[in-house]
Length: 271
Image (cartoon, one colour):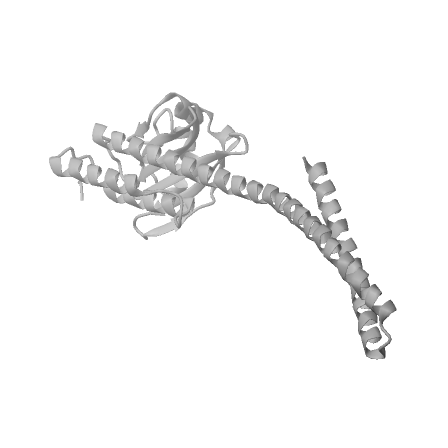
């Protein structure tokens, strides 16, 4: 692992390897956004050798910021859900809009981060932090916080790496949004296809009913002629049974024709 603040070739190789691991992470298929964020925070914490790495996203029209994923290296634990009001930290939030990163060696005294002290830094024992904004569509959507429990000088290489972590998180958010959009599109297609299928089924039913009615007309005519001409009781009974069955079939034809008309009208109303 790289020593904190190191600019050695070994340290650079470690950051490059971590960047490659981040590049291989994708949201989709069997990997959720939450899983990708947990992996990314863990990779970043080990690469920078910091105590905590958290991904925070603005919510409620930027009135609050919520922790979507937090990794703590000492306990090897993941958590989420903490919420802070943006109005309580106006200088810090404005700095996220204006800077590519916020490297604070002594975060409780730094002009951009000291307002975080009483509510956040001091209770959690955070001394130094390196925060990188997350950009989506040209706007700040949140921040990746790299936090350490001892004073830490942040090198240019570490700051570049923090920006790469934030860029990876932005990609996860876009991939998740794209997946949601595709799911909604598939659901909409299914919703639209359903009526079309029923309309097609209605047309098929109507066509079958018309053809079947033509066949049945011939059957009824022949059975009626046989019944009138026959002098044999067994033949007459058979002809009558054919006619009774034909009457039931006629009722079924009416139902099929009614179904076809209903589906046609329903499809016309939905257009």
